[in-house]
Length: 179
Ligand SMILES: O=P(O)(O)OC[C@H]1O[C@H](OP(=O)(O)OP(=O)(O)O)[C@H](O)[C@@H]1O
Ligand code: HPA
Ligand SMILES: [Mg+2]
Image (cartoon, rainbow, N blue to C red; front, side, top):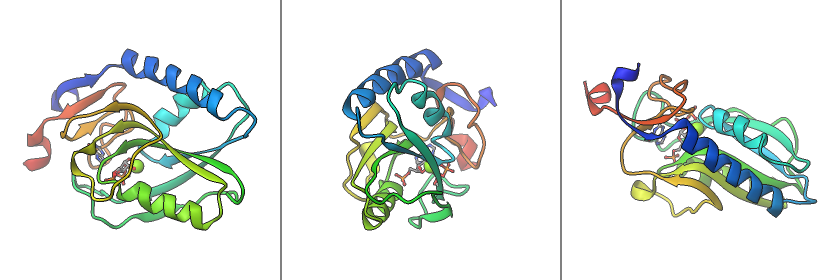
């Protein structure tokens, strides 16, 4: 598995330090709001799990599973809901947790959905932002790191469902997905 990684982009330590800082800011910004923190499965699961431990105010969590990449490095453009939320979002302050924003298609679909379901507010927190190939203009409210235009894996991010279990974020060798 490790042999397929070209370079380590972000170490475990760098990721954890950033999450601590993001948790502090979120705790301040959402004081008294009891936010509903929504994890966009599967990629955001490790980030969500580390982030909530750094949030020091009351909050609730829920999960949604969507997929648009399948076994490809390019978005299919079609976002499929695989698992919907358990609870209503009406009147709630929502914080959407993502691992990466790339084309922007996944989040623009979810933003639209949550607004139609009458959330009081919807904000986005992403660990990684890859702004180079946006198909839709979209800016995160909170962001860990801007990453280069490379296919990255690890810490939840996959290629064809693999590499999610790497504890760091690395650049995948192009021969892995071009061969
Ligand atoms: O901005 P976009 O181009 O839409 O790409 C970002 C989305 O793509 C990946 O999820 P994917 O659909 O591969 O599902 P997964 O989280 O289960 O890996 C990633 O986790 C984001 O949710
Ligand atoms: O660079 C990426 N890596 C893994 N999953 C992704 N989904 C969108 N971009 C990426
Ligand atoms: Mg995802």
